[in-house]
Length: 88
Image 1: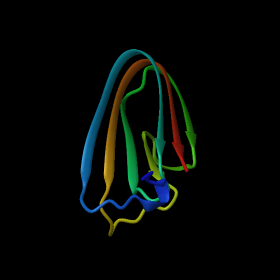
Image 2: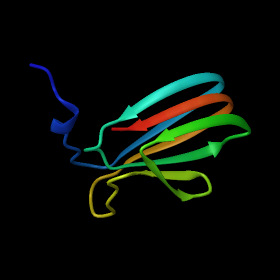
Image 3: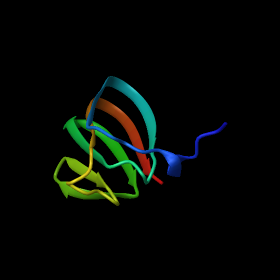
Image 4: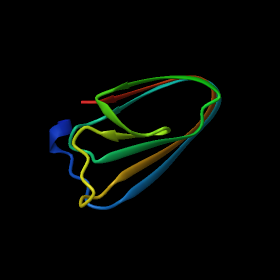
């Protein structure tokens, strides 16, 4: 059977690292996931952050972020390119 994004339940912290030199990427993070996105390298990078809330200069949180729930922690190292993140 198909899994709907609203059915996803995160039970523990998850750390993800995305590294790239040149290119573009699109990530879709379901509303039910408690996500924190941090950019480590962002020289000539453009970003589109639909549905995320800016937390610090290089960090964004999913719109329903809660500190008391498990976190999907995504570190992005991208030198040149475009990254689109969607929280829906």
